[in-house]
Image 1 (cartoon, rainbow, N blue to C red):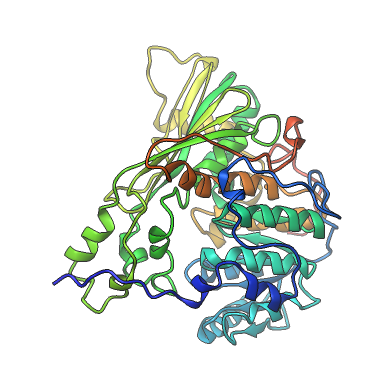
Image 2: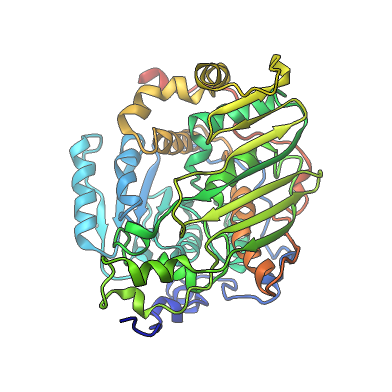
Length: 482
């Protein structure tokens, strides 16, 4: 028997405008949905006190103090990495047992004498964490609808912010985080771990060194069957939170893992920028079918309270840039499909496909239309290793996380803060990459492929080159001591 679909809005659904959370945090500025903002190319004028965060360094810290918000499926796997390179002073989650577990794990590592303070008194206890004066950086790993209010509250209370993907799923909220960063002078960064994976960093180096010639086009995204255990199997908490985004937007909900690395290689926001976007989607069938057929989904499962699934099973989006390049962005978490980030990069002298582990380079004498794979492929990438990997390889193996990329992304952010450098990934990169979510929804709203303008979040600063992952290895006392 198939129960009729229903929807019981949560308190967070009813507070979508952010008004209650904004008042509780003592925040300023509009956080509600803006019809104008959702039209794509909308670029609000800067308000009083809002100045560009381009080339603004961190203050420099002897020891970085971190507050963790969300220690469940994702954040609960990151806690020991933060504690290995920084001091964790506070931990927040809506489940007291998760807070207690995280504090115990951090103290068992033996890197700090004082245990973090725990916050687990309801959905808004994070506000007490961000008000503390012994936190330099707030790390957010919560359901997507909380990213914007939590990041905004942290910056309003003088903290830098590192956010798991995305920084926000709505365009007006993305803009609000950009403007809050500019007004508070605090960085808000997407903690995009895939940008720090070893093959992606080597690809970046190769692109910067001209190995591929003049870059022409790329692809990237996220194709990962999440139906079980993530969307229906209770791997997340609350169990339904990610699945229900499929009832709210017909969009590429999570494209940043593949999009971020190729955008960096193409110099997006550093000599080029996203200009226009058009999306196409298949019919949404897979989730309803899975719910009705899989024996693990019983009649009392929360998914029967979902509104109808409106997000297509497969999305493809083309993003064009001002310099005449394009990126094909893929997203599919509903279909039976092996994991892939669809990462490719092509220039006038060669191509690379990271998921297929193959490269073809006329600049290195490759001929006969034959991909270099296996040892040849690995040797070429290792010859273009980013300095972070040979420097931190042993620690990356020890602390792990997606082959060590999680540890390296955290270590690098803490290093940049300690040394008073600018972020590798700044608020403008974060905004551009995440804007594909709401803009793809906007492109699909009419039921046909409709081009949508991508805002210039940098307000013109994209036109000049500036450093990111291409900076040389700095002098760092931490490395000498280690």
